[in-house]
Image (cartoon, rainbow, N blue to C red):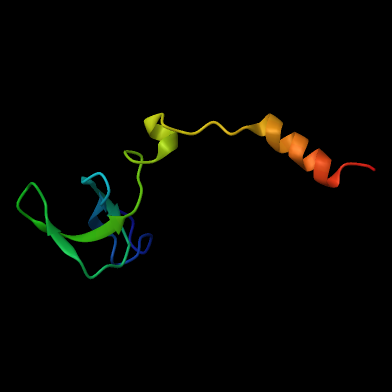
Length: 82
């Protein structure tokens, strides 16, 4: 790597989706005081996530369809020309 390009604390960090018990490791500069022992036996910093691609409704296919037609009608009734 070219010197001076990356911050000093650019290191492997584990990100864990707490709702799905899904974790992945990637290099990051995220600051955290938590640690976790990874599958390879090493201890890495841990960043706890509330949502990831494994639990987000858009990626899981459980996204709710919005009633856009009803919203438009309601908007027109409330703010439409009188």
